[in-house]
Length: 168
Image 1 (tube, rainbow, N blue to C red):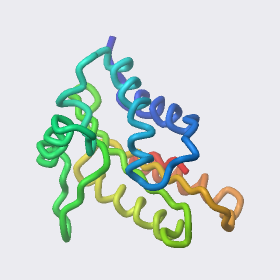
Image 2 (cartoon, one colour; image 1 turned 180 degrees about the vertical axis):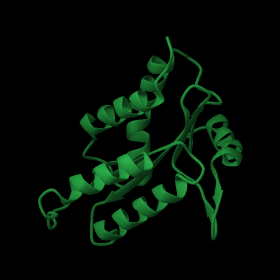
Image 3 (tube, rainbow, N blue to C red; image 1 turned 180 degrees about the horizontal axis):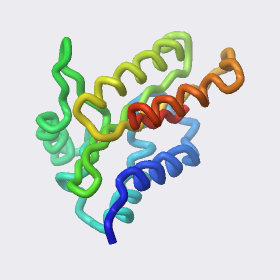
Image 4 (cartoon, rainbow, N blue to C red; image 1 turned 120 degrees about the vertical axis):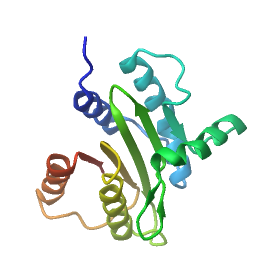
């Protein structure tokens, strides 16, 4: 049975959207490691593989993972007015390349407006090299809500035009 990469990416987005995150999150690194088990399990199940070495790259918590992360930069870095590297990379011949970017906003020290602008900009740059992008923006503070339908329209436009999946 042939793999449909777009279908797999959409399923992963759905998994991430329904994921319950711990209240103890303090930063983007915590966010990345909170979603990693879900991503790891999902990729293993969908691609029917156990060993993700050379397929799933992330910042890493141990020496081996950190070395793999360093080696992955040749696959993921984009040189455009500086070097752009992403939080996670999934690279597999059947699905192409998918980068995941995480942003966390919890206080006025890391404002939501800055985070949304950065994540969209980074996502557009990622599309210069990668087939798919999933951008996850988590915020845990009160703020103004966007005009009704505006966020949904932006998410739809990014997905349909660029294959960028924004999770807020």
